[in-house]
Image (cartoon, rainbow, N blue to C red; front, top):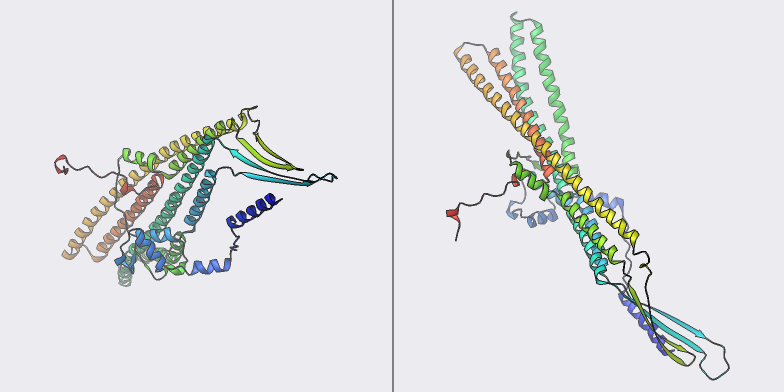
Length: 462
């Protein structure tokens, strides 16, 4: 009996040392909402994060928030990235679990017999279960978990790209509103001049009220468009705040400078290479295919059963008995055919999904690239038209100074130039939209597509 007492005591001691305590972490919606409202763009944690990402520490406090600064803030605050990180951590835990070997077990039995002779009435015993797993099964299980963990890690980068892409889209819209407001204010000023001149001429009996009413109508349309755009600004700033992951109040006191990327036209080969090698969902699909490969190897290895050794000791009414047994599943009868077939089908599915994804990416790349090049061509055309209109405006100014045309004719030419500026802005917005769509296909900024030029042979340092 002393043996069993010692065994039970040791088991309880070991279990007590290894057991972790449960810690409740209830969600408090009110506290979480308050924490969200407390987020600020001058938060010390955000500043430390930006410095860790290579942002110069001497640039604080930030006076102008451009795409780089706002993108770093979005990476720090946006909740979707935290979800992706939590998902990756769960796969890391599964990866660690896959590396664990099967745990041994122990079982005991105690009996008391009613007997009248002098032998002991007690029978007790202990049996250990020691599983022996094949090494190829464990290796395949670890590789499958590692591949799924890698796919989850890639999905963090994919979530980050989606955050960046959404923010860039909102910044583009904000910049377009500001530019349209500026051009409309210039146009309204010209319309007001025309209305005043027509009013003076009508008072003098030189023009009819029809011309004046038409000019006033154009002025009203421009003023209505301006009012609508100005009313859209607060909503657009709120959209940018949501894209970053902060409240609209956190964006009130900062100066946003959207910026404008330089036009680039990478080669077709560079674009295709970037799409096939850099796109994150393609890399994640490759990792999932590797996981399916590992699962198939694991199911094939399971054709051969694991063995469980069962050594034990039994004290039976005065007799001491030592035992040694083993057990295994009779899966050799069907050779694990069902799980193997399922794993093969899963691998074929992952392969077909990868090929379909790759084909869809290449098709989307061709369409987006053609749309981007078309938008660039249209913008160049509109720019040439604007330059030609500026020359006509300058010529009209010279003619006005010389007295060949009156002020109304000169002002009408200026209005045509204002219209040409708005047409160029519209084409520039189309270029930006097409560029961001192309970057979404590549999941990479266009200005980082082309590799750096190699140095000339004579400049290479020996």
